[in-house]
Length: 291
Image 1 (cartoon, helix red, strand yellow):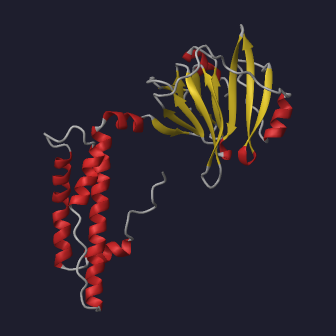
Image 2 (tube, rainbow, N blue to C red):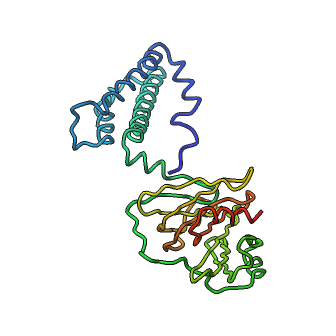
Image 3 (cartoon, one colour):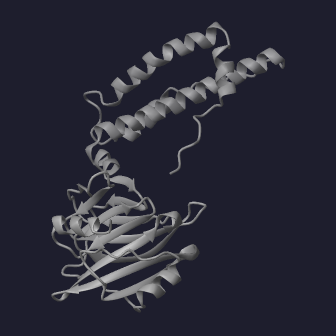
């Protein structure tokens, strides 16, 4: 969910609140202590075990709501005071909700793990999903509808990157994605299994989702001096492709299983995904052989 460009209430509203007189200043002075008290109360001993942290946060906010003020005689001063009270209540409720949610993220291990396991990496979005279950024994898929290497570059609009450590690919394919995007895939056959390299032009800004079954250790791998770090996934996992349009909307592409995977950004222009290489050291050398 996209975060707002600025917190609730503009800078003008904030300046008006600060300059609103002693009553407003008094509330500002009390606010930090009230928030600290709220934080202490969120996980207090003896709390009902069936009540979640979020429910307690929401209950606390609702419990502290002030009844709607009785209407005052019309006038500029009365309207200004009512506006200040409304802004103060809204700011306090939103701040308390934010603090409560942050407390949930800090204190609740499953939520904390989910947040830690979701991050962006170049054109790649990596996400864990413990409920995912890849098909047992599934192999790395090959390159459907192969075309010559030069033809693949012509169709996709960028020249394919061929790792020197693997040499000329046995097959090359181009896949059309939504909104005029393309993915180039290079395939090599090695002793009855496939090594596959997917290449994305970073300027096309594809969103690429990985849903990983179970809890795995994702390792950072350094690719040469001064190069970008790579991400190494040692275990099979469930893949879900996403493409993102300019307005941020996403389109599901496909879903399949895969083996060990190395993800990295090359030359600040391409995002690459290598799968089918069981050795992390060999995968790293293949990635470095693009330079």
